[in-house]
Image (tube, rainbow, N blue to C red; front, side):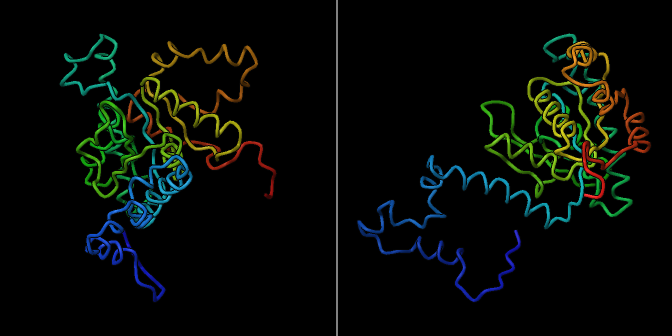
Length: 281
């Protein structure tokens, strides 16, 4: 991380290092003597949660700014979907059938990364959750094209170590789901959702809610695999019940392949508009 200081004061790195060489006394061994910002126990106190939230917002933001990342293409999708070569290890027949979307995610990320590189590589950078399954496929496709990609990992009791295809300097780890989801969407120029479980559904509906309510500008929103999505979500029933409007069903489109997705992005209308926005504001 860059440290372009514009003040004459001694920096925190120097004091943190100096503090490790303090004379060993009962006073210097006391937890109260530790520098606050270098005291892990202190930083994990319940009262410090607002500070930790701010740090998780700031660290990825600053590093992505320094990397020159202007915009991203978000890939959400299941961690349990293996690549087709390992479909025999899938837990269910449905998961085995869904392995085709690993390949489509990989191909889509490769195409979009190549297009990004042709424009300088700072726009439409692939971002995933950084884990296995569809997330791995997205980062892998970006690497296939010779480009960088972002991984927004999170500490979980299982599965969520970074996949090997995330660009190391753009690989982040989170404690708070909420801040992680903010980073997914803060630079989003498009959102692509592949079949997945609870986490994918959470990301899908939060993103749609932000767009539906005008809290986020409209961006191309693609759902890969109509059969899967129609089976688990009765979209028309929501509209017929009046809990969403018919127009809400126009916020997203279904696609099956990477090529269909690329064509949809190239022909998307209404991009960048905030629903309910007052003209001129």
